[in-house]
Structure formats: structure tokens, C-alpha cells
Length: 275
Image (cartoon, rainbow, N blue to C red; front, top):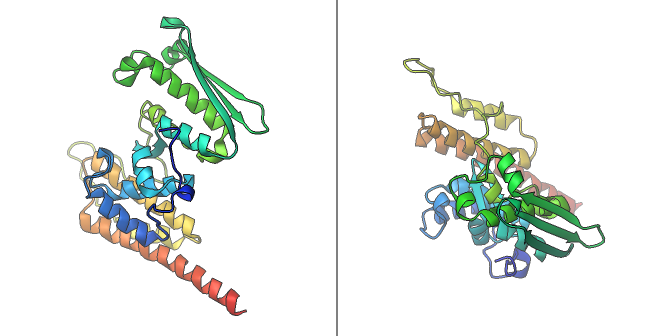
């Protein structure tokens, strides 16, 4: 995969999504198609975020769904795709990986060479994995230990050498080992109520109406979309799912607000042409 990853610029036949509404419609269709990874089935909001993140990296929509993983609400990218993106970049000179030693002395090494810069070398050993509580952990760490060491060394080296290319993404392999993040102050989902405690319903429409009124840029509206998606997920996990009609209403509010900015930009462009 790492040698054949194709970005949007080199694949003119890829689906071109140029607006919020187009992306929203694509997410709905893709999530119901049966042709996407399990994590995206019937989850159009997750598809939306993954495709948006992939587009910032230069990936076509369907490539984004194959290579971007949303883990604990955080977009990440599979290690092979991470390497492919870096090698496809014009600023990459070379990436050299190796495994030294065996048993408890095994260490993975990744040397990332950026054009015109000193090489960045990252090492991740069995001892590092033990210190992090990863060695022998059920799952990939137990089944493919050398591979997981390689992914950690790769992730650290490439993020240090090519932060502009990767836009802050971490490997999905690393994201899987991070405990679920605690609820942030900006999260609008209340904590699970204790047994037998009666809790007043949350007026999500009123809350997000107020939040959207404060948005002064399109990027702020996109941020509210991400927060609403996270709110829905955490409400589901807390055993208090948000009614579909409320979900739809808030999504429509966000879409309408985003359209306002799109229309504003179009009007400004017309004024500039007329002037």
C-alpha cells in the first residue's frame, strides 16, 4: 500500500466533493452502501469526518474511508497509509526501517529523511512497550509484536519529520492503545446519571442554536459539526441516546449556518469581480 497510495492530485477520476452539502450526501450514501469498513456502516457522521480529514491530506473520498480510522472519536491513519503519504510527498527523501535484536532485546528503528534536513531517527524497543503497558497486551501486540514495534517507531519518526504532511494525525495502531478521552469541557453531553436519579432533559437544539450564533467563520461551523457528532456518540454510550428528530434538526441547523457562510463568500467574490 505504501508504494501505491494515490492522492487526489494524481487521480482525476476520483469523486470530487466541493461543498458541505455534497459531502453530507456522499456520507449518507457511503454509510448505507455495504462497501465501506465496518466502523462506517450506518454512521454517516463518521464518514463525513473521515472524508474531510482525508481531503486535507490529499486523499480521494473512497481512499479516505479505507485509510482513515475514527478511534475513540479521533481520526487517525493506518501505519501503511501514513508511510505512503509521506513517500508521496515532494519533501520526502527516504524512509528507512529496520528491526534489531530479538526477544526482550528487540528494537524497531525508523530513519526519516526530509530533503535538505538532518535525518530523524526514532527507536521503540520491547522495554519501551513494557514501560507503556503494551507488551503482551491482548490483540496485535500479542499476535504481531515486531509489527507493532515497527508501527510505533514509524509513527514517531514520521510525525517529527513531516508534521506538515500528516497534519497532526497519529497511526491507528497507536490510537487503539490510547484510553478513551475524558469528556471535555466543551462537550454538551452530561455524565451518566446515578441510579434512580431523575435528570432534566437536555435542550440540545437551544444549546447548539446558541453555539452557532457565536460562529463567525465557516471553520467554526465545521467544528460544531464535530462536537455534535461526538455528543451523539457519548449520549449513546451513556445509555441516553438522542432522539433521531433532534439529531436531524441540529444537523440541519449546522448545515444552514454553513450555507450562510458559503453564500457570503460567493457574494463577496461577485462584488470583487464587479468592482
